Length: 534
Image (cartoon, rainbow, N blue to C red):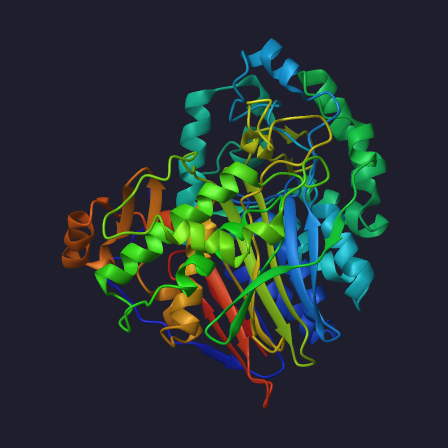
């Protein structure tokens, strides 16, 4: 089931001066705004929004997921990698013994150490202004008091419920008790609450996250894993740490596009933009040749990402070479008048939440967190509301591959926050497009819409999108039109029209005027997107 509006609507960009929060769920945006109005800064607002999203959009993220963030503060951009690694007992040998070498989508096997809670705590320790409990209070209230489901949220919840009922795995028993209790049917306006989720957030708030990694919550996670045959242990949780990283970037049309370095896939978007930098693109956005070149360049970005992106703590990733002019030149040689098959691993789907915040002092945050595929693994820790992600699914099972599964290693990661600046290093603002392997493709399209085609944030997000699937297969949104689809087909693309807008990612964007400080924001029409302003 998907939510499809009966009539199209038009959204305008939103303007404000004192603060802005843009995300995929209205109540979460309001949580961030309330923290700004209490004297918090953009980082406080981002943490409040992120914590609230685990309650009001659990179909795409949770307390048991991962997080990445880019923070503009103090005149520079800071990067945080809050993704977790494989448990010490999770190895290729263990995978062969239990699942014949094939990583399952659900259950305990794909569960890696969750990093989101540590990410909230680390962001707050470095940049936060308000008390941590004050920042998490809106999320606690939503969980304890309940809230009404929004339309796209309800549709995704109902879809997940149907899938989990068909799977009927014993590991999912607590998921049903938590997210599909007797008497609850996910529908727009239906009320849902979780006292366990509220208590968990309170423990996280009171201990600045330590309860999750070395306290009571860690013990509950460890005990549930032991009882269910999981490999995640208290020692794995206690050993986890976030990593502050230097953002990577490329320059294009007087702008600078920033991403988090590997193990994230943001580099795929930068490689594609580098390839396009040496190609004269048509002046009109919806020119079929221009779309053809974008698709072909994106294939080259994925070619490198799928071959080389891994945890650099285990396998060196030559970022300088991948972003070099020589590498772009080599990829450009593959671009022709006809579609080509990059012969690389086919992308898959995923579920994620993204948020952007800004305050009147100039601090801005681009933050993304995820349980990967919808609710994640389907494993929920009893009485806590902690839904554990299935991020281990993105490991490679070939032991010779840089991204091969290994204990203590972080997997290739799909979630990527973006940030746009000017070529002189001054900031423009945060942006992101969530949704599995659609994310770098969404980044490329939104960036080009902004810096090349001059669109405002709302236009840049609303513009119809394409998505490369594998080989020469491409999906396009209905709004691109039959003429463009036919022209792409003539160029060798196997084109299909996807009627579900959610397949093309869901984004947010904020831009700050460098002179007036006025904030301009756009939010996603493909979901329950909302901008809260002050």
